[in-house]
Structure formats: C-alpha cells, structure tokens
Image 1 (cartoon, rainbow, N blue to C red):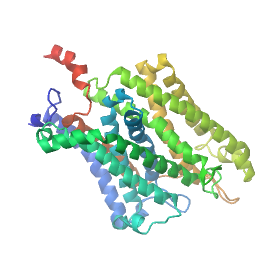
Image 2 (tube, rainbow, N blue to C red):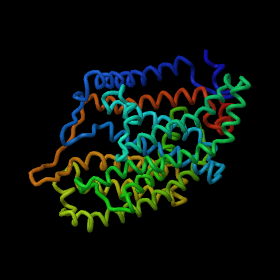
Image 3 (cartoon, rainbow, N blue to C red):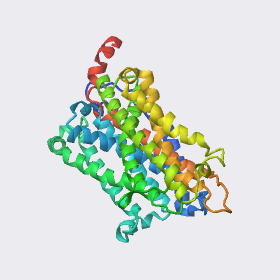
Image 4 (cartoon, helix red, strand yellow):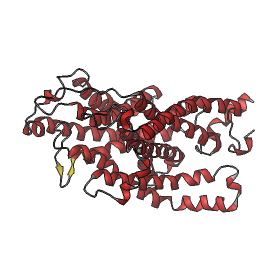
Length: 417
C-alpha cells in the first residue's frame, strides 16, 4: 500500500502490521495528550506540586531527555568538525533522536508554564538575570538547528528525492552541515551548562550549591560534560532496540565500537571530575555552610547513600571501565549492560539534581519531604516516549536512516527469498 514510499531495496513489515503498532503506541500518546489538556485547561492544580516541590516530575524528564539528547550535538561535532567519517553511518539516527528529545523538552516546558499562550513571554519579556532564560533561548535555537539537520534526511525519501529541487536542496544542505553542527555544539554547551548552573547557584539549597570558576559553578561544566559523555550511549541503546524490534543489523560493529569507545573515555574522565567535585563538596563546601554529608543521605531511606553509590559507581565508573576496555566493549552483552547503566546513570543524576535537592530539609524545623507525582504528571512524562517511538517508526519505514542497512542485510534477505 505504501511500498512506493519505502526506501528502494529495503524490506519493511506489512502496512496493517505497522499501523497496528502505531495504534497501540498512539493510545498511550493520546492518554498523555489528555493529561496535558487537563493541565492546560484546569491548571497546574492537576499536579502534586507544592511549596516543597516547585518542579513536577516532568522537569526531571525534561532534564533527562536533554541530557540523553546530547548524543546528537556530540556525534555531529565528531563527524563534521573532527572529521571522524565512520560516524556518517549513525549520524542520521543521532539527529532524529536529538530532534525527538529536544522537541519533547519544548513540549514539557509548554506544559510546565501552564499557560502556553504566554510562552512567547520568555522571549519578549526575558529575565536577563536568569540562567533559565539562556536555557530557553538556546533550546529553541538548537531545536531549529536540529530541524535543519533533519530536513535533508526527510528530502531523501524515495518520492521526494525524485523532485529535482528537493534532491539538490538535500545535497547542498549536506555540504554546509558542518556550520550547523558547530552552531549546535556551541548552543548545546551553554544550555546544557546553564541547566547545571541553575542548581549550582542555589545558595539556599546546600545539597546543590557548588563553587566554581568566575560566574559558573562546577555543575555548569559537569552537566555539559555528562551530556556529551552519556548522550552517545543513548544513541547506541536506541539503535540496539531498533535492531531488536526490526530483527535487522542496521549499523556495522566498527561504528558501534568507535562511538562506544569515545563515549567510554568521556564517561571515565567525567566520573573523575564528578568524584573530585563530590569529595570537595562533602569535605569543604557543605561543612562551610554548616552541614555534614550525613545530613543529605542518612535520614531518609529513599535518598540514602545507595543513591550516591548507584549514580557514581554502578552507573558511572563501571560503564566507563566496560566501554574503555576493548574486550568488554566489543562483547555485545557487556556493551549492552554498559550503555544501559550509563543511560540510567545520567537520568539518575538529573533525578538527584531536581528532586533530592528539594527533598533535603534546610531549616531546623523541616523534615524530609517525599514527592509522589499525580497520574497527570506520569502521563505527560510518558507522552514524549510514545511520541518518540512513533516518530522513529515512521522515519525508519520511510527514510534512508541507516546507510549500511542494505549491505548488512542483503545476504540474509537472499537466503529468506
């Protein structure tokens, strides 16, 4: 039925089977849309935000998708600026994942402001003293860059590419993509960093407060570093999931090994910086503000020391070591364990920097406050996941996302025929 739109030579499942999958995920998406509309029409009283928790669950999701979406800007930087040509075989998919992550982040912000009709206030009545203003500007600009980077892949659709104008436009856009890759890296450096900087300058929240360099707390640099380190792992994880769902090999091992190796060294060096930062904060910064390390962990089982060990050791140091070691990196099982742990690790870091910050008591009369999100928050947090699955399914079906797909699967398809 839609065979004319599918990339030439590629095999896809039948159209009814494809639509059945879309309908199932679409039902989840509609659930999220319903919750979103409740928040817009009835207000943020649909959430469980209170005086302790000014950030809903979706703000954690917002920071998490921005972090894992960092694979797009970092892979683009490696491919177009540092000229690592092997990554041309995965850059299309990295851009699509980045596009999904950043459009999801903007959608979450639109829900969070409660009054989407006033979203333009961020730009017209900008609070120039707020790091979040810079985040909003850079996010919007980088999403525009990702859209530009995504357009050539769309224009390479089998039917669109037959139109001479679209064919030449896609070709010429590929030729100047290094400019957009550099612009994306510049914008990502600042918005990733500023998201960390927001936590680092919270003087009233000693769990998050960090010293730093000039106006930038150390958390500014750690957020940017972690996004570049862990983002490629998310790209590799989604690629592996896509291969599992489609039953096809989509990217050659040497490309996967190379990106995993780069990500592993980035994670390893980031974890050294993270451990030094945590040690300095625990022994100098927090005591200087009148707190001991035990104040932030031992009084509550949910936020006990285990969360620090899980973030730094289990989901930080271990995946870094697994990926920089050649034998474990090239072992599919160890590599998969490493990239899953790495993705959990960066999401856990954002969880800590959003929710644990506000859970820790800061006044003598305060107690630990646990946050239980409403179902509307859960639904709107799952909404971007459903949206991402649908967009990846549509892109994979109709666009030449993986340049090595035909070569890698030709032999098995001949055997089947």
